[in-house]
Length: 75
Image (cartoon, rainbow, N blue to C red; front, side, top):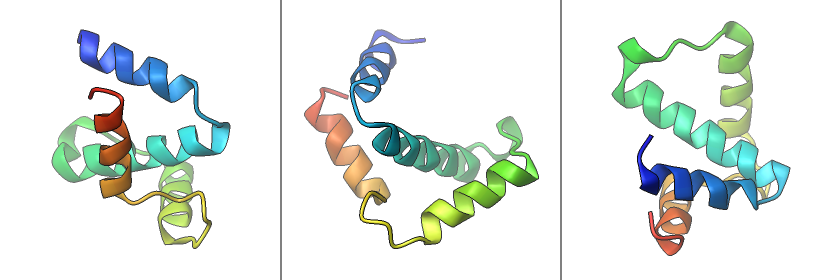
């Protein structure tokens, strides 16, 4: 793991559980879209991801928001 990724993950650990889950869902979606052969989700995980991405929860973040937060933390 790179130092940059280690720092980002350390910063993510400081966020609320809801924010961490939102970031995790976005990363899963990103990896699924860019590395289909490297990531396999269970039906349960896929359902949870779809639920989070389709919801109107104010805690949900768009990929651009996740990227902006990561940039603010030096990623």
